[in-house]
Length: 59
Image 1 (cartoon, one colour):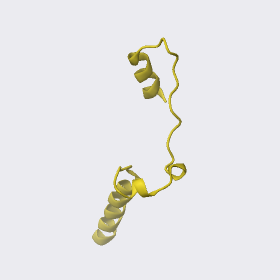
Image 2 (tube, one colour; image 1 turned 135 degrees about the vertical axis):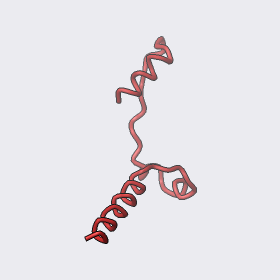
Image 3 (tube, helix red, strand yellow; image 1 turned 90 degrees about the vertical axis):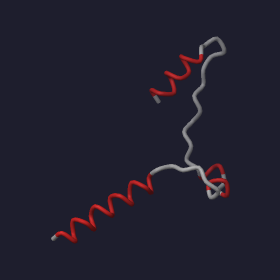
Image 4 (spheres, helix red, strand yellow; image 1 turned 180 degrees about the vertical axis):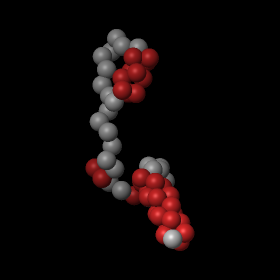
């Protein structure tokens, strides 16, 4: 029983690590189209940096 719980805990730990995005040398070997990036935030020329940041945080 205890071994099953430990196995489940370890699998959860490793799953979370896989989901994290990291920027490493393998990232630069992939084509840009395969990186699954979000669309860039577009703002008008007259908007402030604070407005741009709040828009990025909501998306």
